[in-house]
Amino acid sequence: KEMDRKRIGHLEEQIKSKHLLFKGLEAKRSVNEEVSKICIEKLHLPTATIVKSSRKIFERTGKMTILVEFDSIQSIQSVLEQTKKLTEEKLREGFERGNTTR
Image (cartoon, rainbow, N blue to C red; front, side, top):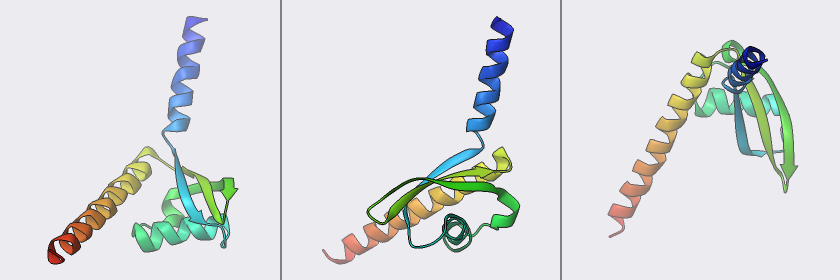
């Protein structure tokens, strides 16, 4: 039984490691359109090679949360790396704007 629990735990971790939540997305588009838009336009990643499936799990006040399943852990890492770059860019832009107004 202990071995079964370990196997189940390992499988759960594998499943979790291939999923990301995208929050606060516009509910005007379809789920797949919104995921494609973010991956291509914002993250500069080709969606066809990395997104396995996506589905809306929550919607409120024109915004939705989408659960996206990727084909591999490497795809997740690519998304996270690009997301980090976006965050750093926004921080840099905000810092530069803040410095120029002083």
